[in-house]
Length: 68
Image (tube, rainbow, N blue to C red; front, side, top):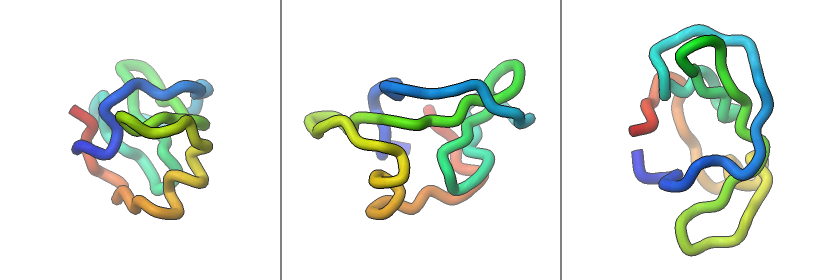
């Protein structure tokens, strides 16, 4: 997946279970080794920082997608 090539700028601990790097829902909740993180703010390569909600308005990522 190329949508995000940098780590998130802001995230919080969230509940969830799945293989690390797996998108758990359409709100940028990503599975980790233990639990999950909710991405709150991110920055696309060469772009400006943006809130996750703003990113998702222009980029749909299906649940089950994997971050590499």
